[in-house]
Image (tube, rainbow, N blue to C red):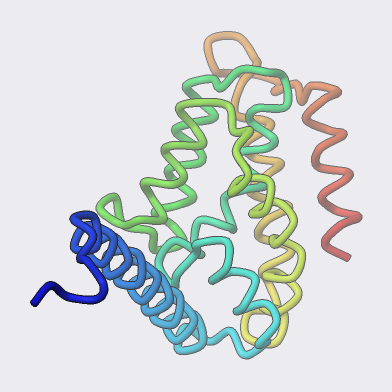
Length: 184
């Protein structure tokens, strides 16, 4: 006796695709939860900031690259990344404890190798203010460090054979001025 509902040969395929979809959804949710927990355990106690960082794809490791965003922005202000600027930024990254094998270092290198225009970089720029503001309670020198490091990146080029007066370009000075106002 034939079944009342004939089986569709595509049912198995549809079921497999459905299962794969939900597996991916669960994996993404688990990764975001792990990122949130990692960010919280790294000392960020502002739940809204943690949520924004996790939603943007940052975790406790990659979020350390945020301190480098203003430096990268200063270096790219004139439309090109110069070797001295790159060296200075990577030196500052190491100074902040960013290991060359970390996600944060990889992200900084990505921003140094190609002028950033991606959404994650733009979001990172918008988050540096809240990150530094949050850091005031734990690291009151964060704002000063970012501004001094940005100034040193701007001064990394110029002079004659690397010596003498280092000229900060108008574009770099404008970026530093905007940054200073943003971090108040």
